[in-house]
Length: 120
Image (cartoon, rainbow, N blue to C red; front, side):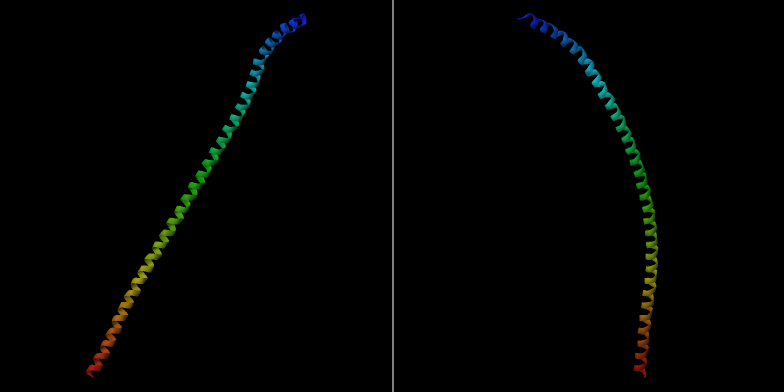
């Protein structure tokens, strides 16, 4: 081998060792930058999760309020309907009583007419 080739080979390990010394520093710097970015992203995601939890809580509360309001309205309607049903049942009873009484009176009237027709 020539002298120049030996000099090149001799300087290469020095360059390589300097490269290896810098590589971990470069790698550390890149890792730290990634870590900082990941921490920022993690903080952003935590904020988004907190916002979503708040939205979910508000939606759940409004849904519960709406459901209770609808239950109140439904109960009021059911009460009114039961009152109406009771009223109609009473009217039907009166109507049936009137019909039964009218039918008996009509039968009595025809009975009297037939009795008078047979007697007279």
